[in-house]
Length: 251
Image (cartoon, rainbow, N blue to C red; front, side, top):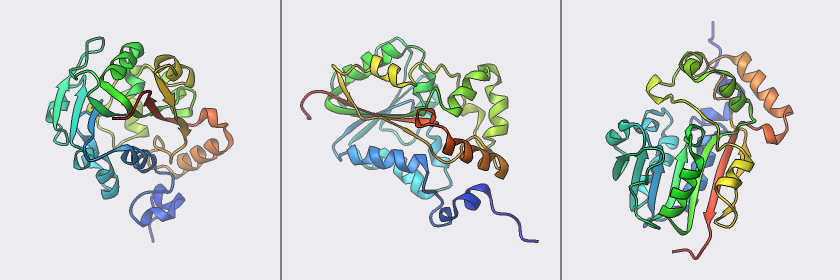
């Protein structure tokens, strides 16, 4: 008896050509990040973690996220000491919320923050610090759940103390070491405009609906998630792709 294909191949048959779907959020996000990157760029990876993307089985996704291969310097910042072992960084620092980032004023060209904004408990501290370290004309690029999307609503309904149990079912491939408490204080259009005001930044963010990421390997759950995303309004899309341009002359 021929085994059924996995949900990715079943619902996105093009994924057999390269391992990613037409709705792959990682590919879409990092393509835009790389469009802003220059060989002489100084990059801050805010929330760099241990470099878990190196475990991605899809080569093109790993390559897109390896910013060090395309920039002059990549500075990793994280509250987790695991960042010190991240092999993809030029340098790494353990930071503390509310304390100054260990980066000089107006020294970075690009800040990349992937799945980190949802964990920030003091968004105004972050907004001020990223503004301080970013050069005029620089960019903040972040991917984060939409507070009013299905993922954000589900994440807020389930208490943080139960996230590990829930993710063991919904995202069985995700390791416990990569799961952190969520706050969702920087995950709406209003919050983004408040923390990163238009006097400082021009906003080019948009909501995104990628392939299901919390449906495990259940074809039924994948289909239900895809149907739900098709009928819900865009304001309830699962994720934000945040692109903020610091005002001032480009360096």
